[in-house]
Length: 76
Length: 415
Image (tube, rainbow over all chains, first blue to last red; front, side):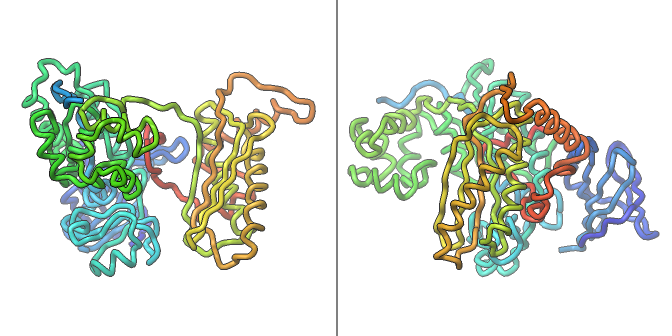
């Protein structure tokens, strides 16, 4: 499901540890993949993670330092 | 020709079910489930990669989504995410570079390593390296990723060996076991031998891989009507003939069109978008081109293609679009008698490449001004993203021409 909402992400050692979304704290349980891409000169980091039964795709914009929750998938 | 007695020094690494496995790596909830990555998720979308679980149920690459779902109703269909795959490719490339500088990516999911100069090379040692690479891929790139590795005295047999067991295979073809392996393979199991080539071989009394290996060169030359017969004989005898790097001779882009489009006004924005994409890649590589080629494949299976030389070498997308559009006009009247045949695939390419070292001025156009304009447009797009600035005529093509991974060498995987 596409979300595209700004979220707060806590990082420890280059990895997301929790995601604060809609007032709820989601603890990251597994990092599936981390990949990067450029759009023009802007570098984006994408973290595909799970928080219990929720899959989350997090995007970090290195220009404005914002995190976006792009999509979620609940226990397919 | 006796089989090559030299030790195996070539390693072929093949990432199993590449796109689908990477999606399962990214989303752990997809692991162990039948999934497919398809060009479109609609019924007629073409499946680009099926997961190991889906393949076990009979889902194959190239099938339509509806056929895959008919075999496996629980099939999860995803759209491709090219940057994910390019990143994994680059991570694999970096990992492999720790072992040898003499390696080449053959596609987004295949690498060939030449370990000839690897110190203290011995057969068990090479298998130990292969095991180490497999372990490192799981630890450093993703625990769900598996590769099949083939080892042989030449590139071709290393690829065949990599295909013997999937997923997660490790096999060697060498002087001591090649006969046993050839005995178990069908002609069409060999890369490069499909029905037509198999029929050519059958016509010369060759029905098995063992027959193929044992056939004299004159018979193979007669079967293929060319020197190719000798190359096949050399390959199957374990000697190298494929260690050749071909220089780039063209740039091209294509698109599979989901909707039923057949009118010029519907197709020209897509053509403009493809042309701009192709030209920006051409210029970024420092080339110009003096030829243009258009191929149109229809949904009824028919196709049309034509190439044309331009009066001089060009770099400006507008020049290429003008020539391509004239080709499109030629193509479409030819279909007037068959209006029920929408376009399935539109492909444009340019050929006759030459390095952009100097500019030929002419009387009628201000070439330096054109150069400055295209350079400015390229700079803006480089800074702000592809197609930030483009021609108005290509706007309608944006929804159709998406970022996709091409077959063959991943030339754009080095971003």
